[in-house]
Length: 175
Image (cartoon, rainbow, N blue to C red; front, side, top):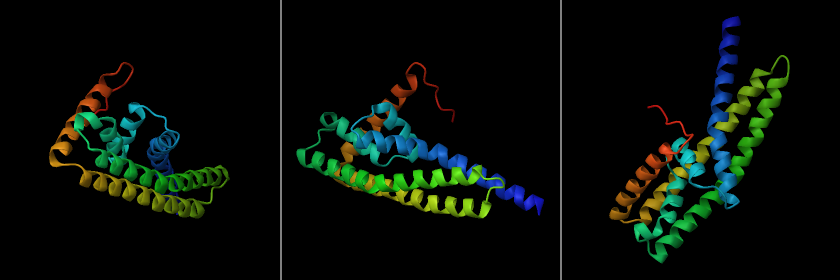
């Protein structure tokens, strides 16, 4: 029984810690994007954690002249980004709320692991939906670009990533 309880506690702690690490850049990105803030540094971190998604749209818009985007393409990408932000903001809020509830449950002695597990599962459903929304935005954004623009965007992302890694005070990610 002790081993089972230790396993559950360890799993819950690992899941919560992973959730905090993953949600932190997501929350920062959502707040910065909705407030119209955030330089490339925030977007680059978001890009790294999310596997791409909506930030590529922001990068494409940032480099609209290099990509030679038409007015229609710019309008389409802006519409996709806005739609993504509108859909994801309430989900980010839900995740933050649930993480707060988990934190409160962990403060109890002894912690109610059943409730914690339920909250973790609830949080993961929202995270899953956020991940899908990012993938949807990415695919919709790709559909607007030509093949040449997609290739050029990959090059731009690669060069910005290399530039970001060279910045003073930044520690390169170990592969």
